[in-house]
Amino acid sequence: MLILHGWGGSDYPHWQSWLASELAKDYGTLSFPLLMHPHHPNRHRWMKKVKNIMKTFSPTTVICHSLACTLWFWLCNEGEVEEVQRLLLVAPPRLDCDIEIIKSFFPVETPKRLFAKEAMMVVSTNDPYMSIQEAHELQNFLNIEMLILENAGHINTDSGYGEWPWVLEWAKEGGKEAAGVPV
Image (cartoon, rainbow, N blue to C red; front, side):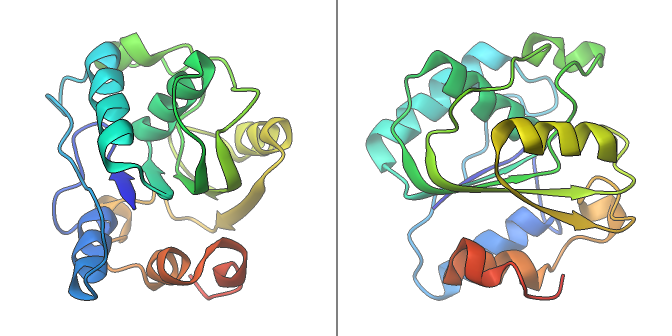
């Protein structure tokens, strides 16, 4: 399993850090790399790092949060990643985000192929980086399942997502079966 953080990283108590530690307890094979300069990210450097990880680690599952979703879209558009079994996109930002410090990631085209046999997106009704209407449009274009969380903000520590049993169940049991688990 490969867990990719977004802008600023996902240090404890973020749900991605919690998830990595929970999976490691059961001797799960995972990679949760700190991407170069997480507070001042550079798309080209992040892409190079993730491509190297994909080649050497060969994950079957990839879990992306926020800017990592955009990074995955860039990798897909480039077409140089191997297909994974499962992909989880959590709180992707809108495709034309205009925040200056992360401008090298935007705009990004919606990929025609996600390089995943199974993909799911998790969004919030009040995410400041993507409206629910934009989320529905992205979901329709990607033709993937979507879980909508009510008032979960950007689905990060600030919105109360440290321990998140649903994502652990999804990671352990597999995508569609876990979709019915309470969030």
